[in-house]
Amino acid sequence: MATVYRATAPSGNLVALKVLSRHLTSDATARRRFELESRLHLNHPAVVRVLDYGILDGTPYLVTEYVVGESLEQLLERSGTLSPLRVVPILSDIASALDYAHAHGTIHRDVKPSNILLRVDGQAMLADFGIAKSADRTSYTATSARVGSARYMSPEQAQGVLVLTHSSDIYSLGVTAYHALCGRCPFEADNDIAIARMHIDEKPRHVCDVNPQVPRAIGTVVMQALEKQPRRRWYSAGQFARAFERAVARSTARNQLWRRPGGRVRLMTVVTVAGIIPLFAAMTVVVMMTRSSVVGNHLTPTEWPTARSIPLQQAITTTGLISPVTKLITPTVNGTWVLTRTPDRAPALNQSTAAPPGTTSMATPSAIETTAPLSYTP
Image 1 (tube, rainbow, N blue to C red):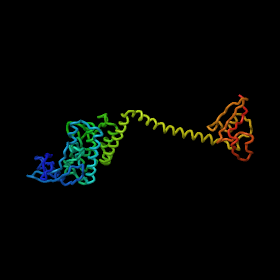
Image 2 (image 1 turned 30 degrees about the vertical axis):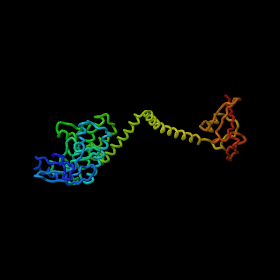
Image 3 (image 1 turned 120 degrees about the vertical axis):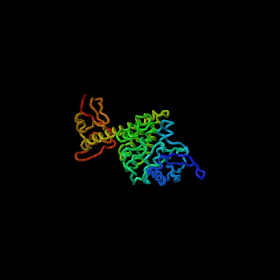
Image 4 (image 1 turned 45 degrees about the vertical axis):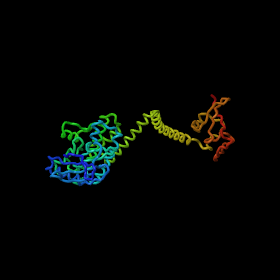
């Protein structure tokens, strides 16, 4: 659509001179898009600024700031793929630029690697708002509605929807991230029409299926940006970028722990402890419930048998002493069984400490840990 030259402004600064292609100078739509880009006045660190606009010998031109560096497209042609960690700052910068443009009612409609410029200091910048449009205005004509690059356009763009939302740019940003991680776009075909149909009808392969080196959690974040229905995508470009950054941070932390000497042991220990703690808590609850149930069935002090010798089975049945509060049942030297009760729950079975009928008394310190022989001979 246009040819870009490096030029020197009268001030002596380097600038980019964008000149409309000669065969489009008579195209009213192309000229109008050029003019629209000059009127956007988007002032953001990650947006390439338009400095001037004019017409020379019937040919429109734009003067923009000159970015020293390369495009994301050139970087991908050289490296093939980028690591998720390398994608994070690029995605963050471009998402910030898109959120700014969307907040000012502008939809880019052509987010792709060739329109993302990477400065030598690492800053990513979004360029070429030539086919951008105001969110509250329709496209110029029905035939011009399907604009943008086929490999990066959203399904609604491919369908020729006249009124697009900011979600269309989020989809294109997702395709760009997909390309950076996988080295290819989600849909490839021999012609643009076939690619457009694939955006509309076909489900893309998961990022991790194309590049197994990318953790699934990271790939899933990108795949949500590629949902066919705009309402199912990320709400904003910034939300998409933040979710991507969190997924990369979690994955990086796990990898660093795993690769560090002794890290595998520590990681397995953390996982093991994380599993044991809930199990221990559940067992504690069960034991406490059982203890509470058994202790609750014990008789009050006035209900303890006053007889010094009773059958063992009767003692077990009536007093419930076979429980966590029972210390020991042991045979004595004379053949009888002795039942030792805990001091905090049961008074001694002793004639001297038994409470008279109708009264309540607690065991005295001297009576604690006394025993009562039971009339059962093995």
